[in-house]
Length: 285
Image (tube, rainbow, N blue to C red):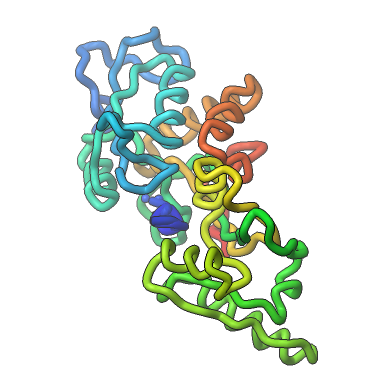
């Protein structure tokens, strides 16, 4: 999960976020090999890897239970396809390796990249991007990156937004406006602390992280300003095995039923919603 790691601790967020004969038995603990939307309920068990420690994507709750946006979406997709989903903990690297070995049916929360499209098929499920948050009583920022001119922005050092904000700062100056004061910090927590203490006007983070933190810290933050660096997030499957089409159909069904929106709202990630699932989209620049 590139953003899945915060966007990837997020953009984490996140991520193949992750042939056909191998997947026909993929992750199955049942002798019944039926699969797809027309399979009987519970006829097959699909084991799906979930990377923990990246809320709201997937994490352990206080009781040690695996929860999150991706486990919930995976379970719902399985129900729509007529199969049982078993979510289990795995690193993202091992998730992709397991997919190639036939251990997993699909890998959730994977950024769609040109390199990954060479090996995997994708059915898009989410759109990740970066945005901004300020204190609940803080300033309102316009919807254009130009509205950042003259503001101080706290950002995690080494993350992709650093160069994007620096480039925008140059554009501000070229337009005769004040530059952006790009302040880098070791991690997202310290970047947010800079905003809370008044050292920075705003901090930037993934859309998923913004929504989740705003929901879990009510009255502390508000989301404002533009979104940028959008990237498609999909469920990855092996190239040519047909699973991507099944995932696309199931995702479309969840969207139409409204259960897709309900799952996203559960984690404050409504801003990551898609209106239609696409197979193997062109990677975002």
